[in-house]
Length: 406
Image 1 (cartoon, rainbow, N blue to C red):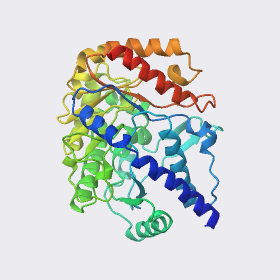
Image 2 (cartoon, rainbow, N blue to C red):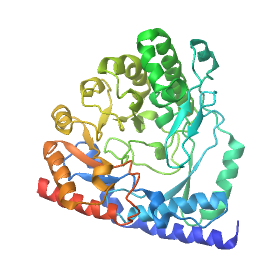
Image 3 (tube, rainbow, N blue to C red):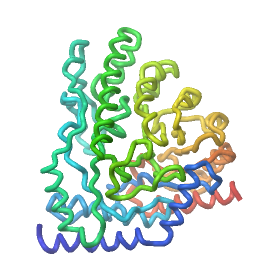
């Protein structure tokens, strides 16, 4: 760890601390608390992605892996803060605990294209019914020695400048806890869709095994006092009047004090009945333990809104670029937060045609005018190297919001 690299990262940390301390952060917290509690606010904007790897600001200088990790974090968040959306920047950095069990015990090989940003295919390990016996039961167990070593290095690097949070929440959460994601990796989407017809009880056995394992790992983490307020997750800003705000190093909380996020992207082509029978009924025992739930990512939930209403603590529903915005608005109303996700390709992927983009936003926002709506820009793969495009999109989106909402 060279002195010059260390000082570079520390200088970035100082800049990030200034961003976190800006008064606008408290105003954004107030807005997100109210918005996620279904109170009337202006539509909030969240730029979840902005083709970061294309930005010249993304180029790191550090060779040391630890320094490079935090250099990348600070560079990305400093650029993000310049976009002037409604994202909140929290005054801490996180050290993830080292988990002894973070998967299902069978390797999932990924075969990639030559382009590192290209596609990949999982070589599914569960190919025959008897392969189910290969799966390892999920559990929550932290490697304390490895975690302490990680923490010591980061504390030495940054501890006098910014709070260092230790995230001890279980490995089985978010994408590792929605069942759908890892079912796709382990069995393959085309295979489990056939299983619904060819061997439905066997598929339910597999999904049930995963659901029980996730519940066990999350319960063990709660019993160990390892869930913390930095473990909120709702694919936006994890604030609400009903829950404690995100915070660093506040552990020993119950799941009912936290946001939970789940998706079902691999089930997008299934019917509502199949989605319910083979997935949601196994997700519900996990979801019901949490305070509030955000459901959906890129899958089209247009014809599944009634189905997801079964989730007792549901608060946010994703309306993906593939969804019918007007149909979703009619069903969601103000019962839940309408998480509107316009097509990133149309928004910023091929130039920024102001009239075209404004027209798309205007039509969709008018359709959901009576909903509790926020706007997420996500899955941006390219802005053609234009480091100002997303910033201009945010500005234009605010103009359309002002026009539609007055």
